[in-house]
Image (spheres, rainbow, N blue to C red):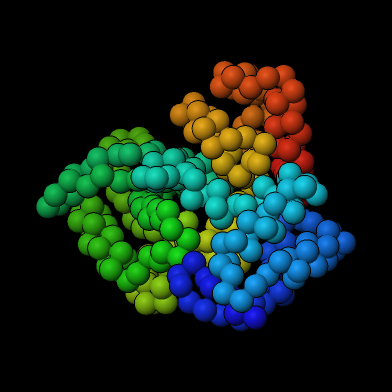
Length: 276
């Protein structure tokens, strides 16, 4: 059976790939087997992978909202757009969970020109700049031109002292983070140039997906019991993480949810953050 990926590529349908993604959501084997059996009955030649994902998500949501939320995690990151402003703030939250101090949206003077930085982080006296490359399309990749360009910015900035955290300090390291993937050339160039990369699946162990699970940094956009409009309202209120609403139901009241809706949202949020 041939199916069509987001990129337009035609590939063989692999039920094991779907099984693995469902297992990662936390669903038990009985639920996973049931969903795979249902999809086997509905799949057809040339079916888009996007439609298969929607079917799996729908069946998973009927079984467990919190499992569906984890299954929806990559899509949830894409909802931190469209411009990526909230993705930058979300990345600052991730570094804070790892005991970094953070600053966002700084404008600093380099040796030659000024630069707007997404995030600046400090830990153990060392300061790094963090550039976030946000993509709304699932198949978009960050290619080698990005680390080449960011390296030139880093080289310009490291020549000067900057007022960032306490006094005049130097930037000594550079990160590039994307919600999707890096091309192999981008990884090769960044590694050779001493640039730290973080993406959905890179590095192999300490990638974005695993860090989110490890620190329970699930974005508010992954919740299945909230509408897109309600998620946007929470983002505007600077509520970015699921765990930020568990002991703060007032923010749900602020966006107009009824007591019954609040109960359902908190139930999903609590189950999601207790998964690990």
